[in-house]
Image (cartoon, one colour):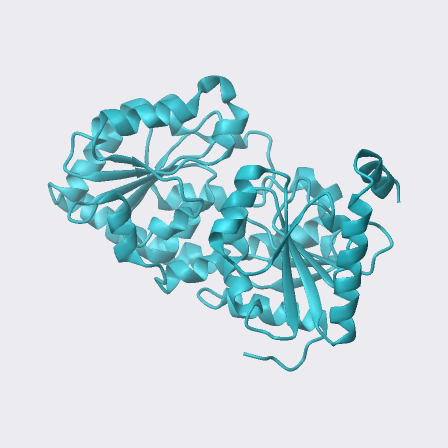
Length: 392
């Protein structure tokens, strides 16, 4: 109640919207229609939910709402998706009695107000668990959790006791189904940057202070751009928010301006370019490294383990580094790329062949239900909603 009073003290007229929406939800419930709200603060988090949304949207017994952080750019992004569903500002959504609250946020989701009957589901937005231990007070507030792989269940959920007070479904990572099935419109992706005809390098660095973009980014781009390739650069949103003094927006634009074969990817869905790329260069700690292993393409990682000092639950990241071909200097990655793409070096080709086998084992270890996670997640959601007859 205190939350509601604080909100209304700032804008008393919000009570009208809250009452109208609650009546709408109640009306739907009386018609036997379940309501769910997906809560998100950043554009890339819709990618985590999208495959589930597509299945849920086909069910006539469900109405979907999206609760977004009060941000003009985020609202515009969601409007451009043209989903045909109700968008609700996160100042209002916590006070609406939906049947189910879903989020991939782990630091500050906009939980339903205490006293509402809304169930709370956490679907997670990364394959690693090392960053989850600090968020246990938040995670313990959820009734339901989707486990991405064995690193979640049994390791994390049983070790922390989360499984004792909530329901855990071994779902997998629904967003990766599209990679495995290659469901993206590859031709339109080629046309977006006019990049068909040359090998494509995807450079997707981590945002942390020990990542390659901070240590070698400019040198890597400058050196690799001399090759007959196209380079897609996809940085994490946190690089802008965590290091504003570095002016990364300006630096990225300068790369694009200086090197005609360098393209800055602004679409939030990094994995959309996985299938058309020929290789990925990334860092320790990125979910992209493990996701990319699902399609068994060449994986190169800048090896600096400082980010993990003092952290628990880093076995997935350690295993990924063992599978990857690693480098610490610009000259190393340039040589590796040149040998792989142009010199057809037998030694590195053998390394890649062995890597593919290791990637398959790695994916099997850290992902449940590869290629079918969306279906499994959908079925878990309709079970929680009490819908037993599915409507396609």
